[in-house]
Amino acid sequence: MDSLLNLQALPPTIGAPAVAIGGITLFFIREYVKDQLKKSSSFPPPPEVPGLPIVGNLLQLKEKKPHKTFTKWSQKYGPIYSIRAGSNTMVVLNSNDVAKEAMVTKYSSISTRKLSNALKILTSDKSIVAMSDYNEFYKAAKRHLLTSTLGPNAQKRHRVHRDVMINNICDQFHAHAKLYPSEAVDFRRIFQSELFRLSMKQAIGEDVESIYVEELGTTLARQEMFKILVVDPMEGAIDVDWRDFFPYLKWIPNQHFEYKIQQMHFRREALMKALIQQQKKRIASGKEINCYLDHLLSEAADTLSEQQILMLLWEAIIEASDTVLVTSEWAMYELSKDANRQNYLLSEIQNACGFDQLSEEELCKLPYLAAVFHETLRKHSPVPVVPLRYVHEETQLGGYNIPEGSEIAINIYGCNMDQNVWDSPEEWRPERFVSGKDDTTELHKTMAFGGGKRVCAGALQAMTISCIAIGRLVQEFEWRLREGEEANVDTLGLTTHKLHPLQTIVKPRLRDRVSIS
Ligand code: HEM
View (cartoon, rainbow, N blue to C red):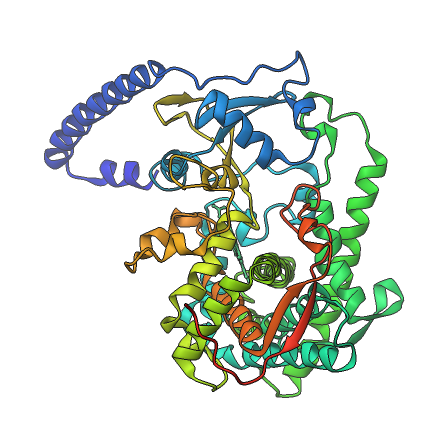
């Protein structure tokens, strides 16, 4: 509109040639677009996995491990194929090449999301970075998150919280080993609660022990806060409302489902409001803390609504509290099972820092520790399928035409089980990442953090916390699985969470050097 007005205001001598040039340019653009459309429609559609009328492939996905079913189908239908979830078409990507094409080259056509009914409520309609479309809100919110919390400089400022966390974790394992030397310890109970405390400090500035929530009429202890802010919404996010698959039936009520999700939302919002209110009082009393809340209130209160700020703070808490636990728990499972690799890692740590306590400064000298982390992400990726992307304009992927309105599922688990890329992918073998050369591209081959513009904002934090935790725990203890624990490899629902929390026997190490043959 502005440019039309400008053109009208131009003197006729300049305006006429400009209009002529504009007209010719428009003509060529129109012809080019037509040509491209013709070309695009000449690409074939991806192969289809046969399903049933109306329900499509839904019944074949009922075992609730979609990443595994997708991977099985890729052996028959290839790295890219389409399925039908009720009336929705979903294109599933199972190889690195085609996944990268979607995340990087074709991002502009696949940068939005169509959320399930549960996610619409739980994300307050896309009011968090990870679920928003690529728009001005997204850009501003991501900038705030990186500047205050997750970017490299912010992570340096939050170092003290990580040091406290790792020391607390080690102290608790020592206390257990002293009191019950031959009894297994529940790794998750200790790790999860310390991770939650760290996430609260980074997000709101304080590890709140308990709080009175007026709207709920009760005082909540930390464990109850964890349930309301992390456990319940995660369960809700993967809860299935059958109307998601049949949008034309959305007029039929599903009251039980709606009530459950609305209750989760209400409780989470009430608690977040109370936590924010408490911190506002702190700020009013003149005490500022380096945290996301103080940053948002001072830098974004004019541009973001109170609801958006509440949701962004909640996002920082839930995202910090889960994925790192999944990775660290599986890494300790694999190391507890494998005394040789555990000793190899210990000798690397001892060579790097002698008998001094391992600290973050030494992480760059420990390639085997990094390999343990990346191999764990490969085999047990905490996000096995990237949150679905929506194709808002027709595009092509892997030589196939992808129509507007499809959804894209990037099956990271499938990419990491691809036998064309990984030798014996079922085996947990960190050595594959340290094959003599320092090949950092190998490290990112797992795509566990996604890629392109939407690459995980918390990758640095995840890697630092997980590596320092695995390193310190191996430096200070000898790890062994409890009898019968090796077979406990089931995962929970749609996730890669270990179904049964890891049970290990920990024995504090004597200050002996290990020798590796
Ligand atoms: C091992 C741990 C982690 C893994 C494997 C992981 C993986 C991922 C993946 C696959 C995505 C989606 C990318 C996409 O949509 O294309 C993502 C996005 C994101 N993650 Fe992580 N994540 C981890 C830890 C964290 C942590 C600790 C935080 C924050 C405290 C975090 C914050 C985010 C955010 C904010 C996004 C959205 C980025 C965007 O849309 O621009 N993640 N992560």
